Image 1 (cartoon, protein in one colour):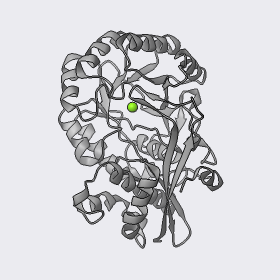
Image 2 (cartoon, rainbow, N blue to C red; image 1 turned 45 degrees about the vertical axis):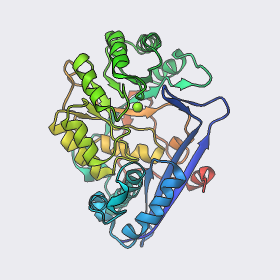
Image 3 (cartoon, rainbow, N blue to C red; image 1 turned 90 degrees about the horizontal axis):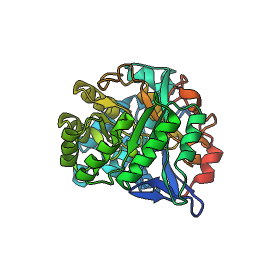
Length: 381
Ligand SMILES: [Mg+2]
């Protein structure tokens, strides 16, 4: 079985006027994704997602990766990232981060999907590792909204849906941070896991002040308190607070993640399976992280395809290490609760995160079927 065609499919959903939302660094008015579709000589189809500006990354996939994968065996998925690093693909002059890693990820994940379908196994069994059949979903919610939503509303909805963990957006001011965290904790209850995400909107001093004001609410982690590039800021915060720090959604590939881990910048890394370099790359990153006592919990703000890839990966990562005082912590898995039809409409069977548990598909490959009519509905090329 060889790969015979490659297609990149840019998708976009525009939110209605006034319905933009996001984090403290800004709101979005669209939800986007770029699917990568590989077809083999026997007609098997594999899917991946390249999470980057849609038409830009679609061009990169078709212009640069077509020659690298058409005619090859999907079993070569493990070496695709190596071929980028050695310069066999793209060349070494243009950098290997950002959009290049997103394109690589989309193609590589589609190859793993094919590989699983060829062998009749879910990707999680091919990756090795823990091979969990369920993870604990956490609601990514309480966004900053254009319409000034009452923060209690989305958190009450998450609690009613049975979520036992949630992550909320903060980072506008210390008073607002306290109000939002207090609201979330009151609604979710004392036993729930609660995380906060600043999207890098603070300086290190502001972040330290904010974290000291909210740490009484028992936070499982604090995400991106300062911008991803501000490594010195992370290290300064880490010496001044006693709450686990997380980052990784804006980092790419084995070299950046190895630096994050070995420099002691964070306690939890969050590779995104739409742009971190692929499933083999994520597995490599997880092995390095675990060796250095850093937890791995993927970031997920993707379509249903990137979500499925992250879920397969998350089911394989070690529980170890567990932050002090948190023995028995479940493997928390990010599940965005904001408006995004690309998350559920393009799948014939959408994921159901309600009830406090999320099943990891057991079907071959990523374990999903794509509704191609729905895909066409959101296509923007
Ligand atoms: Mg985040």
